[in-house]
Length: 186
Image (cartoon, rainbow, N blue to C red; front, side, top):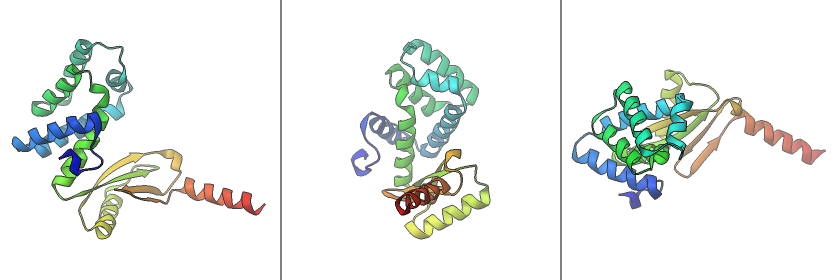
């Protein structure tokens, strides 16, 4: 399966593929995705959790103990929790963000969806998200799952990447191109 999807490779791809195959057998693909999305949100909100995940200073035992407490508090259990604990026991917890991305790609591929990486300056409301999904569906011909990241440095507009195609309509890029054109003209 990993070879069929170009964005799924390396350590993260192997772990994501193993988890995806297990989730498919257990008919829990969506439940596992929801748990991983929940964990990813926790990771993005907590500098301490990021440090725990990324730092090689913590022993596997210390990581496992802390991770177990986080999973219990977040209500993440079953296959997802066991998987994250295996990742920790194998000293691969640092790769969890890549595993989550690869798992999302495998799920989208399995469901015939495309995944779009979207960067915006500030959170989009539901109406704008729906309009963006509809526009991307008309272009790709597939349902599009959005992976939205907020980056205030783009000032405004958005950057959308679907597969190998990217559209950058950010204000930062437009201002940089104007600046570059003015340098050439002067």
